[in-house]
Length: 377
Image (cartoon, rainbow, N blue to C red; front, side, top):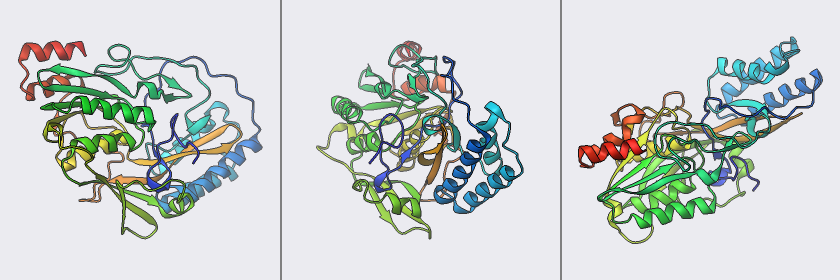
């Protein structure tokens, strides 16, 4: 299978799609490389290609038809002519006005993330990071660098282990590293996962985590992929045992994501777990958060997450443009409710920059020690 998203693909079961990184505020960066001027005919072709792609792939067929009709109508009236640099953003604004979706976007370059960019580093939010406090993952072509997927980790208090997760890129190296860390912390009485700066990704790292922290097989999150997309991509990759097909509504393929314990029954399977969240925790981070909250395996502390609950992949629109098109939705299988536009609410609501100290307090760490640890982060 080709690599559909991020810097390395993380397939979503046999559908072959990835959970996307959640949209983030633009960072300061170097000027994009000059782009060749395209003609109005080129842009008309981009609009028509996008309309067709949405009709065939977007998660909700009825919304897809509305998107496509609006695009074609406005294009036929000259509404996308002579827009200059506002061409892509105007298309996105029109689509979002019809039906908002935090993953649907259009732009230059791969996946609608904009044109070529040099590697840049900007200041992010709270919490420890790979290269100094608050450092955001590097971005190449607008995408986070997988080498920064796992930030700081370690024993931060007696019996308390901490792991910062910034991305689930699905690379073998990241999956192996998260497994090694959890094996090293197998005797922890408290484990803190920090996803306050987590940008998204796929399920591979989650499966590695769940296999070590759950004591029994547990259903977690539901996932509906548009049937036509699933059928086209079926066979691209084998279906992992953690993704199980169940009956669902007409026109979709429904799966339930399961936690499947693997290996010995260590104390970590029974440790207390805290999950730190923020408004920047998006997409796959939210899938992870809902799985941990719904199962009762972790207590979520912080802020309601970003609300980017649909998954999909990039599509080339030609003439230097591409789009990220959501083809499926994730949801709570108990209520059928998704978190798109809403987010996953924490069990304990506190400002994100206070979440670590609150977790340490609940872990029984002494006041002076927890303030020292939190301030260092």
